[in-house]
Image (cartoon, rainbow, N blue to C red):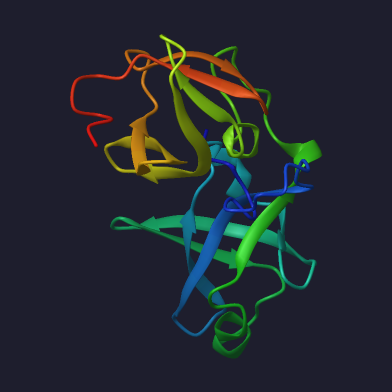
Length: 180
């Protein structure tokens, strides 16, 4: 569930038109290459010939090549021919149209399907509303804002009992998760 809606903290329940697939980092070398922090779990997203869009400008970029350099991903776009071009897109969010998103498995959801959902315990206790989905190295968390403050709920089968996208999430909280 890594391809994320562009504005994950939006309280607007409208389905986004684009999904975030990466963020441009610093320029690498003199030939227009940039570091890209890839947020997509579909590795072919940055294969040669594929296109992404800069979210703020709607400018399309075509991937010319991608390589790993240590733990970094370095991408050369056809539209960036030198270091100045690469520097000009530093910090850009790269998106794809939602229509190009991969098909989800039965137990997968887009972040925008979870944000705004009410969260209740299996006993029916109202916990709050999902305000964000946080993707951490150790796993994903729901940020749930309720009457007793913010709760971070792990997105794991042991806790999440059911999901009705755009409506409701039922949880079986582990001890200490909701301690006030």
